[in-house]
Image (tube, rainbow, N blue to C red; front, side, top):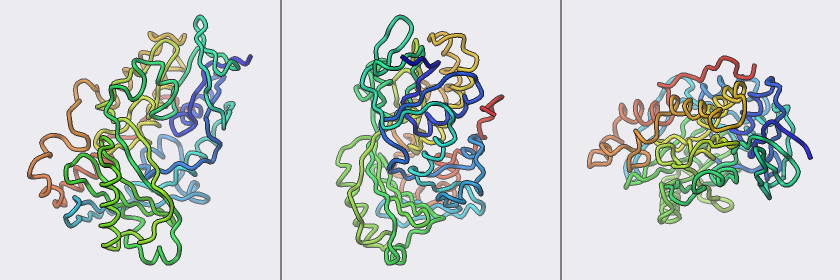
Length: 377
């Protein structure tokens, strides 16, 4: 039976970042994922310069072999209204393909990795976990997304009392004719808010690829909202008339609405498994990366895997992302003061859509990159 100081369940951005950040810690780490890599991961997929800085990624180096779409503008509107386009001048974000980005992050990990390997059993023995009756560890790290099996060990588990965001999206390579017919531009993602302000849709062109999707705070009539949006965008020429394949569904939690604990004796959650997606945008890559970097700092110093030793991680998350109990509200993307008859007017304002929607809610430009003492370097 193999022993590890910690086992990370999930090899996406959260799991691979944690393993990468611990590469000089002297800890023996195992990363498990139920899928082989590279794997298909449909996602609108953008990362800000702050994320690349935190991960020590040189954009020029990355784009030499991977899709990296510079973003300088955003086109924002409410469904049924004209859109507002804002030019930010400089590059404010980058479009990535998750199948490439996640594989790239995992390729930098020098820990043991077992891919295409599902977690089939978790047993507690004294102060250790036995995983799949094969690996033994004092600490399990859940990094496997909303339905991560490690998250089921904490509280009531995922999905029982939580408001879940449901989304459907598709990503495909444009044919030459589709590329010519598609009015959406690569450097200008489009965000279209639902009329009831309980979700939004997007159109995101990344080089030769196009991503289209819609997410809402619940799955009530999600397919109807999506079908109506797609039909409207096709009629306007924003997207091709012939979309291939099916839209794929996924779910995640927004930070202010998540109720699952972040840690317990021998258990710690990062990324979407912890419910850390930004409340106003649903974006989860930056919270996944930053939560894992914060976890790595704590794990370097923790004398054991007890909840008491891991508690500084919970405190670091609250300091970085805010205290959930103090900022919870009923709305999803938009605060209550926006959910009024003024919403339509605000969404036609260049100042509001740029300074509030884009720069604050989606790009979090007011939050500097996470700077840690070691950061695995």
